[in-house]
Image (cartoon, rainbow, N blue to C red; front, side, top):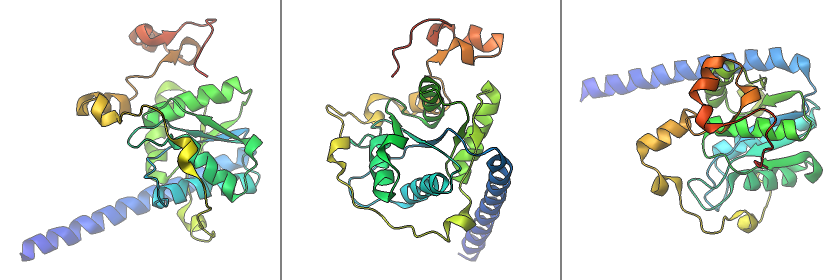
Length: 240
């Protein structure tokens, strides 16, 4: 029993140490990239909504997006996410919350196809380009920001990082505005875990389902690898 207790203490200390590393890294990335503000748009990945009050992830991502908009660091917000684990289209729910906080409706956009975090970033980036936005940043929690940063560097996606700074978030009034989420319910919803097995979902998380645009694949090896799910340059896209 004593050994188990010691192991639990060790694991907790290790996780706390990892959290501090992520938080410091996020703050450093934010300070570096905010120098290039204002951004035409920030991308905010979705998260499953349970139909009741929001949870900590919603609170963090939406209030941080609102903070960036209110400070003038971002002119527009793109929320990304389909209905994945629950019947609610994640990006729509987040948009309702952002509007409830005070972001004008004309400055909020939703990307409603993505079912994985890599898709959140890429499909929202494509939407931003279609809307004529040039300077784009990803605004999410430190953990997801770190993982998505690696993905964007790998494929040379020109999106900056404006991760949540936890110390700043703690100073904000993180209240929950009232919304009516019923309009965000997807007709004929079937959750992702019923459509795909674990390995299929893992492949999706790794970006294996993304339909790429040829112009975004800078390296020949990726154009060869993804030729079966790539929209050739010049072809008309029906994504949005």
